[in-house]
Length: 226
Length: 309
Image (cartoon, rainbow over all chains, first blue to last red; front, side, top):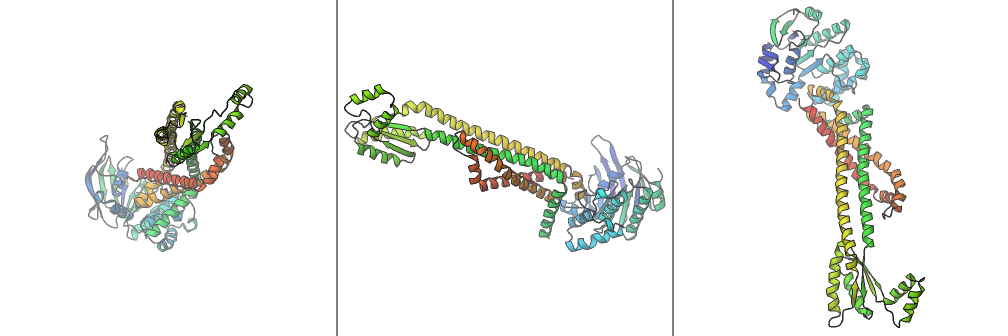
């Protein structure tokens, strides 16, 4: 589904964020990427979202080089990916409902679909009661659940979760990971980065360990080892 | 789908305008100041025009005829002058009227009156007062008079004694230069202040959108197209413009009411309050168009910066 072909990213001051990275992610996989801060995890995710461009090599999504997509195609491609971030990145002036509706509007869905799907997906993350709350009125765990609801509402092929539990307490962390597992069970590929050893060890899924811009370990069902 | 998108963009812009209350208020206030500057430019232009027109109207030339000039010839000449495109108006003052006016002017001067009564006949000739449409045209009119005079009186002595243009020439030329310079200066100042007003507004809207830069990146990540992201911001910019134009036209009412008598007393020949009432819709249209254009273009350009990813 996603294929990194000898990708390097070198910033202008000649420090390499990624060095000669190659790996494959199959459909319906749950891949965790671990490593210390500055290991290159976020750069790697930004490559997949086409927020960053590789200095060398290429990144493929179903045989299409994502860095050579035209603007329209790039927008369509991004709609096939749901993103969840440590800092939630909700639109602060829109309610939970509107935040999710916005992603559907961007994907060109009809008003009827939006009216039907948004409450449904909010129920899925157990936030039906907070539908009309603004992000400022929600707790960290609730915000992250809104972000997940937004990520899954367009039924994406892939969900990218960049340290989604970094700002959450253990109970919320557990709940968020459970939701992600459930989404994966329903057939969506998930790429997760985290610093949380407990999360990685409990998942028992594929783990890619990075250090200094390189992949130093790639295990089918690994644990958190740095 | 197109209309659904348009509807969503307008709604989204409207909602953002209300929810970002303080940011909107700040932008609207700054833009109101900018539009007030533009109104001040319009008012100054009206004042300048009216004052210059007033001064121009005070400039005229007198044609003094010889005392024995036949009245019908003078009246023929007056008709010919009135037919000239550059002549605004002419006034004929017969020698009797000229004498009466002279006596009036010197009513307290016994010696002059006595000297006058010693004479057998009226020493004053008839006068033709001419006003041109523009002071720069007097030279041509004087030339015309000089050639006409010889032909009217063909063979006989000329009927024109003298034209006071030559005495007034320096004053008229100086006035022409002042009028031209005032116009240029007025235009330069107007452009200068309008530019400053536009730049300040642009910067304010840019700051308002800078606050939203993270939102824009989130919108991009959920795959929203550039047009769909930009639309609501442009709608917000249009709303800033609309609100500011309405506030400005309302603020102009008391301002004009207060300035009206002052401008009248200054001898500018214009009452700004009357000007406001007479040109209300014209002013409103200018303010609306300026506000909407500045708002929309500022927003469009400001968002562009964050759409590059």
